[in-house]
Image: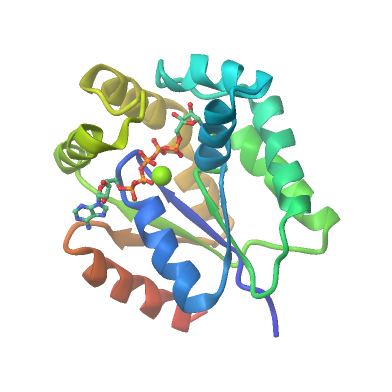
Length: 191
Ligand code: AP5
Ligand code: MG
């Protein structure tokens, strides 16, 4: 059977990580979250972690070349049975171009880009709530605002990019976690 390779796309707080967990459970996918990889490096105190912390705590993106190498490395290390879910990557047009190349070199392709579309006020509410318990250095109002600004200027243009590729499926990302997952399942059933 053909593999199900999903890009889960959306602003900070749109529910990429939350919906990824449900997708993994239901479809047996392998999760690749660049944010999680970086946070692990920070926790381990590695050289990469120290570099990553500089960017993450300021709400800025890591340089494309660095993150593309991390992505390719992570992909080669993981076992893929039913497919992959890319969470938090790509976030710029050059990253999307790089992903296309990395995948085609491995005889892989993106099946669909699920775009979680959530209003800004709700995003900020969710991230502030998470900030009270997450310990994430970027879940404070100043860094949240910076992440949203970076999202609009650098990441949002990818929507257009994937619409042109015929891969983008918008999902209204408000409502309960289960309601949103129901919509995602319907989109996947039609692939
Ligand atoms: P990353 O870890 O990818 O963070 P992000 O994009 O800012 O997104 P979040 O993880 O904050 O939100 P999410 O969409 O996963 O939402 P979640 O499910 O947690 O990136 C962090 C940083 O790493 C970047 O800023 C950058 O510096 C660096 N980085 C990572 N990838 C990079 C790349 N490719 N290039 C360059 N730099 C990169 O949900 C949020 C909260 O809302 C949770 O508490 C959740 O419980 C709650 N929630 C979820 N759904 C609902 C719902 N339906 N109703 C109510 N609450 C909900
Ligand atoms: Mg996340």
